[in-house]
Image (cartoon, rainbow, N blue to C red; front, top):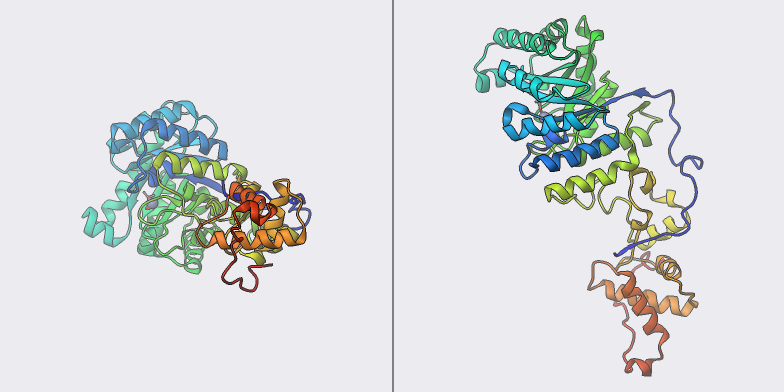
Length: 431
Ligand code: KIV
Ligand code: ZN
């Protein structure tokens, strides 16, 4: 309600070079969405079957390539959600997670039966820490289990992904042996998760580049990154992984996932699109559907999206400071690197009137509401807005209308009440 419309926003960002042109034909990156699996398993984000179906439809509209619908062995509801999604959503490949155990893989295969195109995603930890402390397995047992799981999964589908859990903390030599063996066993996508979000970007790029160079049959599979956000580096690490040779990224809407979450789908997609000059890669994501997907997820999980969340937060295209509002009114590129409509946000969310606003934005909003004002009136209205902004987070259209009416009403008709005056109007806010 307090979000404002800027009516002089017409030019084309691309033609006016708001985005830089790609340096070459972008390589296609496969988007593997795990909102309904890694995201859904995080505290506070569990969804029932109808909610999962609704999110799955939004993910289909978004254009994700692979939709990981759940972990069927985890619960009958998980299995049912995978089955219903596989029955209804036909464009993307539908994936289901399974440990390397036979029952897991068979349950995943059963749940995926209605799918047009299905993927079994089987995983096993490869780090000594996980093998010894959690699984109590030797490296040789791990290797044998990974190979058997991939072979079994291939009996149900040609599309099999193997994830080496805690890959970034695994012994490199052993990890390469596992990867070579699972590819030989029929694995088509090799995912190397940074399970605990420990990697740094340059390290992650080198990690993938080294592994792809060392594994002799690396060309027989697509390599994938699955980054967690414990240090806030999940998107940066995913981009670095792409530079290291990865062609699939695993991510989630709003970045939901275990602990601090997974790489945020919307941030990855828009980083690739906006900075195609540095990152010559693209996805098949229909970016104007990003905001709706984010809102839907927030609604069905009752988990709000952080206001300043990149791309989909309500402040990500909002300006309250006078200097910024003035700049945006003159040329949006002064303070925006992409257009709100490119991610499905409304242009009306752009200028917020409040304590930090400037004259230019106040005048522009009054004009959009149909008022033609004299210079003195703008001045008085602006001062009243600043004053009211001391007590309110934002000034809505109705507040502004009331202020305009009071300014235009002679003081006597107003009971003689003086217009509120700001205590201090600092430089810049009054632009
Ligand atoms: O973070 C992780 O290692 C995972 C795997 C199961 C892919 O989510
Ligand atoms: Zn994960």
